[in-house]
Length: 111
Length: 116
Image 1 (cartoon, rainbow over the protein chains, first blue to last red):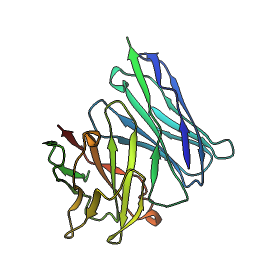
Image 2: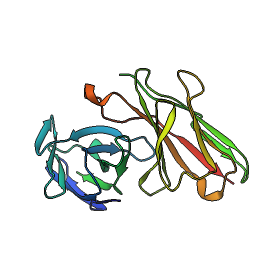
Image 3: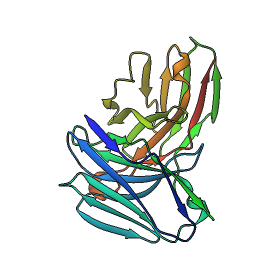
Image 4: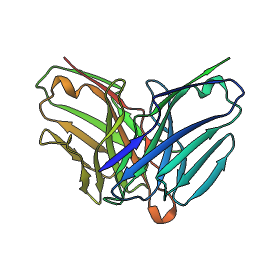
């Protein structure tokens, strides 16, 4: 089965840096996604890590350690529009197609 | 950027009625999915579909659910006899060929299903 853990809520200040952690225990592993979801909207893709290390894309970076079952999403220069839920999701090896989502971390950016 | 399109955006139905949720995946994608999200809860996997058949399904996807790709563009989710607990946002998603590095899931904007 899949077990994905992330903090439920976080608060950070505009202009600051925030790190959202995700730990997972899965029956297999073929990659880890981060998605952003604003309330009432669809998830939108942020990053995809297959190999260990840091992937940087503008203000967003994602890190993966497969041996530790751990990932984080780093958001720099926070903006008010970054207030959203951030979803960690794992593609297992039980089926290439299935991607399992965590409960999401609701980030509130305050002035 | 290409989009996954879902219709309708909202669907209200009576308990016990059948509903069909419609999706048009991105045209060159090969893998299709349905997820649901009950208000305030996580995005839950329902089913994946590849090469005109179900490739994986969750325990939620029981005999009341079915999927179909009736033509080359549409992908539908049918709930035969809706229950109150089926009320949720239903998301369709698609992804491309893994070998081409197109693993990411593109989501439609969702259908909000309300069962009364």
